[in-house]
Amino acid sequence: MLDQAPLSSVAPPLAAASAPIAMFATYVHPEAADRVRAVLESTFLSEGKLVREFETQLSAQLGLRHPAALNSGTSALHLALEVAGVGPGDEVIMAPQTFIASALVVVQVGARPVFADIQYETGNLNPADIEHRITPRTKAIMVVHWGGYPCDLAEIQAIATRHNLVVVEDAAHALGATYQGQPIGSISDFTCFSFQAIKHLTTGDGGALCARDPHQAREVFRRRWFGIDRAHSPVSEIGEREYDLTDVGYKYHLNDYAAALGLANLEGFQARLAHRRAMVQQYRAGLGRVAGLQLFQPQPDRESAHWLFGFHVENRLAFIRALRAKGVTASVVHDGIDHNTLFGGKRPELVNQRQFDATQIHIPLHDHLSAEQAEYIIDVIHQGW
Image (cartoon, rainbow, N blue to C red; front, side, top):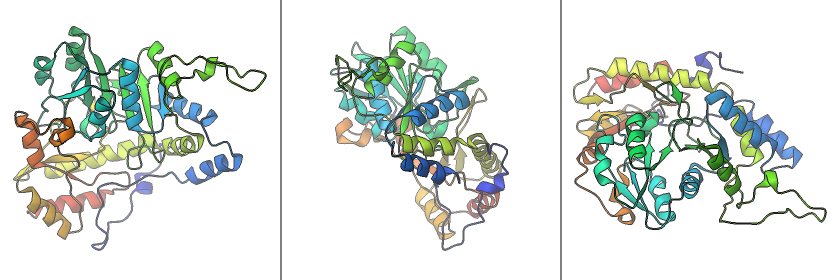
């Protein structure tokens, strides 16, 4: 294990002016190539023992409950809604501060996304704007842990319990985060993770779906592979599996060579997460009193996974240009997705979302960012824009 590896092992020197400090970087463990090569040489490439080992390690190391490894985080969201029974005519309440995949899967199952406002200080769904949006058609609440910072899950779960609603966590940014001492991935009815290339942990592309209830977890495992329960569908003497398909399933499973990459990248995960926390502490200490800049406001009962470091700025375009001139990337990651015609068009009544759209910005935060680079970025910001 590399959990005790010095942070210098993941932090390159300060980028030259000709090579801007990037927003994101893909982490690949040095042993990954050997692990993947061994799978390729075995010629067993599909879902097998390495997928099962990867799922076991996600549970053992990160506290995920019943994780089913899938081919993408979007597949995880879609399968969660399917297993939860969300379908045509239903409504799912969610925040627009996310990527379009969160709402696309709602439309994909025939339901309608109903957007609620966010907290300007975090980018997360505002529990106070949920309940008045509930109708007899509401089936679920989908929460997105923006930038890796957990939503107010206790308040949201209380609303869901009162109205008999399912809670689906879009935790694409939040692997390794905790809420009130519990790992994200162990709390709600369903939790969906992404292992896409620039996430904390990558399998090239991939994801995982955690179902809290053991029966629903079995349904997830069955329906990720066409709806066939492989554990209870033996191969007959003539070479055919014995099964009776009762509902629609999908080809959403992960494969062994992706799992090999994931297993390699799990090595040292906690050390890399600690490195991100250190970079965030450095940013917060250095940027706390900059005029025209407002940091997001975390609460002490949760720990972010720190996929992003965001805040609000005045004169945002000038800020982006000033940093770019000094070799630093700064970017809006996603505007509110409710502006899309497919989802009904922009909703001006979501006042915090509209303000967030106008002022949010993010600066580099990734496993390869060094303390020297972070200090340089802080100094550039202090020079003004």
